[in-house]
Length: 100
Image (cartoon, rainbow, N blue to C red; front, side, top):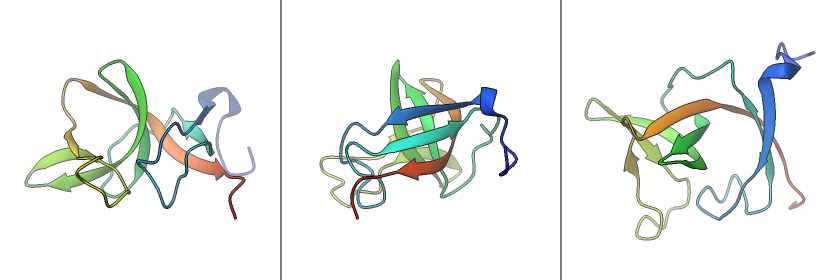
């Protein structure tokens, strides 16, 4: 509440793989603000992609939105087009990690 979020519109989810490393690691917990679903370049969101919840950074390139991983290994984590298969659930507003 002190940061202006409505608690009823927040949910937490655990990061499930290394696609967002080094910023978000496997096992980190992130808080998602479902009031904020407007795409913004370079901002991390929780997204329902083909029925799976994923955490990705939205990137605007060549007039199109892309779901991008922070992990530099693009052979393993290639970017994907953000289209009708993608539903933005909310912006990542907080992370909790046990890695220091």
